[in-house]
Length: 108
Image (cartoon, rainbow, N blue to C red; front, side):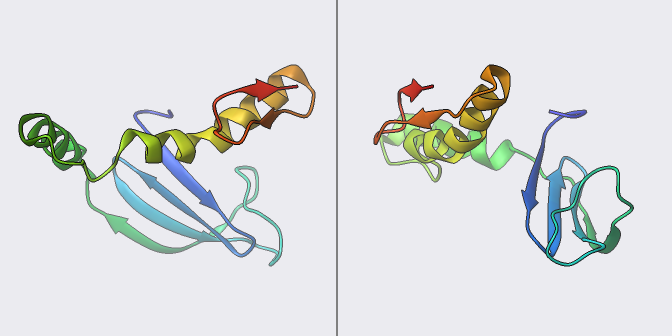
């Protein structure tokens, strides 16, 4: 969370950065290497439009009332963040960290 929230999708040729202000696509200077904050990457495209979580919250509240499945079920969110959380554990412990099949228990 840098000044609100952001999500970075790091690829070998470019990085997509999404946050409260919109989205920006950066091309890596050297193809085949991932973008990092210290290199001056070329911004390829920018979409300046606030991305609100209002629709997400509205969908969640509607689903509480109707008992329908939300657009983003909690299980999807759990599996989406399991990898980054595991990387943080491995970094903090300075060891290889692994998840069980259900992605609920970490072993080092």
